Length: 249
Ligand code: CA
Image (tube, rainbow, N blue to C red; front, side):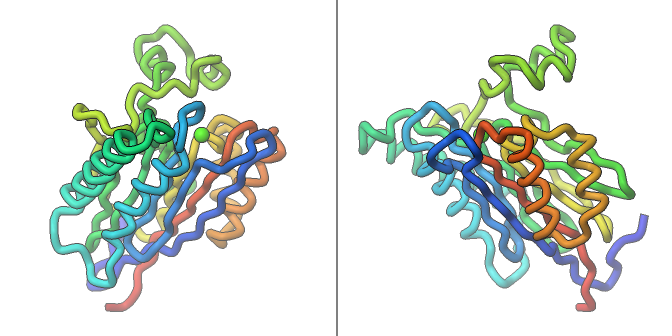
């Protein structure tokens, strides 16, 4: 597999969010910067979900300096999410209206020729490589556990009434255990981060088709959001498309 020898790796990214057709407020939050790319989904049904998703995205966006990250990207990502977790605990304790607020987070940090990935909850990271779509994150959900125990098929999980029940979220708990992965990207890899407003409404096959067909990241993100809206978009929809590119150093 080709690598970016002697070249700078960059991610050319775009993000689109939409409140959807049913809800009145958008509790999703996203950031597409130079090195940090994040999607967070304030957990529905709880107060101040939009504040929780903004807190975790802001903590991650602080890593988005002009200089390449020198430290271990996974340590930086873990520290940022732990900091957001503390801020959410403090905000919940300080204001009864914020009590119980929670968010998912899925984020990438570009560091040299590697990419760190952090994940909590049911927002997803996919990678399109050579036309093949792979889901890189495992949903922290009740239905995912049932699928892994052979009690549900993946198709049944998609329509299960409790499919939104997350087993882990950034909500101020001491036992938060983010999933951390170090990725080695290849030129022409395309990453997709999304909230469950996309992955619940649109099949992986349809997502893959759009990622293959629409070259421009902004237009691609817009097309994916439109597919979710056409499917009814009962939830907020957030999509971030990031293309790996090599640039002369
Ligand atoms: Ca959602």
